[in-house]
Image (cartoon, rainbow, N blue to C red; front, side, top):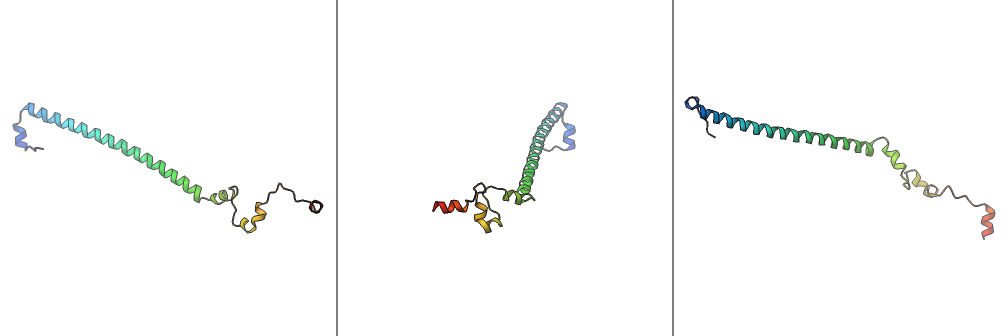
Amino acid sequence: MIQLSDEQLNQLGKEALVVIVSSLQDQLLALQSQLDQANAQLSDNNRQIELLTEQIRIMNQRFFGRKSEAAVSEVDGQLSLFDSFNEAEYLKQDSLKEPEITEVVSKR
């Protein structure tokens, strides 16, 4: 890019100055357009970061929150630490009725 001194600019004709100012305006418009695009992309990136941060916060709350231990104990078929000491009693079905002594004796 050529840089002109004040004296050289004073010696330029009106047409040359018009061309220079027009070129500068075009460059300024192009730079403004690039800046607008960069700002829009930055805004979109910030929105995505906020959404991901919120998702991470919710996931951490689910996995490490107060209710996480209660939710784990409610899972079907999963024993808690205290249930594992008496696994047979935990796994027995409550719907089955214990047979009467007469039934046991009569089957033999």
